[in-house]
Image 1: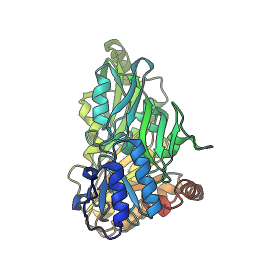
Image 2 (image 1 turned 60 degrees about the vertical axis):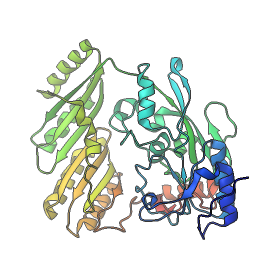
Image 3 (image 1 turned 135 degrees about the horizontal axis):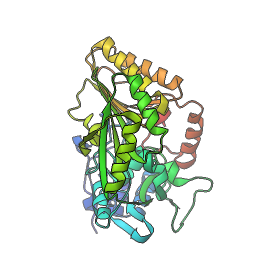
Length: 427
């Protein structure tokens, strides 16, 4: 019988190490390396199960031993959120990367959490279908990861958020329970909508092992049209005219770089005749439009290119009517501290902002921006902290919702096994 390797991990007992190795196999447990750090916290082991039953057994073992588990997919967003209070081992879903059931005639697919977005995209494209989202870093990002971080994109305007696309999920809970919603039910957690509960929870309530999505046909053709405006107020007027019209656009985004003229992009998907008709309608509404490359839809991801220690990357959520007000505030920050600011906002009110500044006031400016946005019912999440603000809160205030979220955490993870301290309010 194989035994667990001697990894010299003092906080994880030899008995616990042997039990983990017995569950996943000796070759699938290893000492964590420096590149496995999460927000400068060094985990001790990486454990890689191959089935959801193994995931459940690993969690049960960790729960009983009082160990902290950090779930990981492709690792593209591991530094988002707060630093974990402690991290004993990473639970890697990399081996769980298969498509389990593809009912193409019903436009549904069930896929393991470790499958990358790109791998699923390529499979679906072979039969003219797609999961209608545009996640960051699709070659690395996994299904479990995008669900846990609630990462969709500009297509959300037409096809809805991840919570609208997911129709079933399986969660491995810290006590070893496999809870399913949608499809064949093994055990339901009474009173909870598991897909919506797991989406955006940062892996603090359970580990997503598989998910079922509704799919959409691929469009025959796509057309990107761009336009500009002399002022942010004029841009808001044009955006409002588009949103209030009968145009069938799939996406609409605004791009701003410093004091440059703001630009906006429209995406249409249809037949050649349909695209021509949409263009004519749009030009009647807002004036001349310029055809652009589909590369403009990578603007959100481009904000992360060459990110530096002095960079802050923020995700904000505001009312669609507050987009240009928020952009004006961001420009004011840039002017006051000599920072370089770029932003990409979707018409849904979700925006990404990059601020590059060596000014020590950047932390105060982010705090002031958060206060203003929250006062209007919005939110600000710090996805990348600048070196001048290492302790700034990633999440901000959740108001009355925090007590409910803490109650859910106590119900599903009373031992604080999963991602301790990483979520809102230190959950």
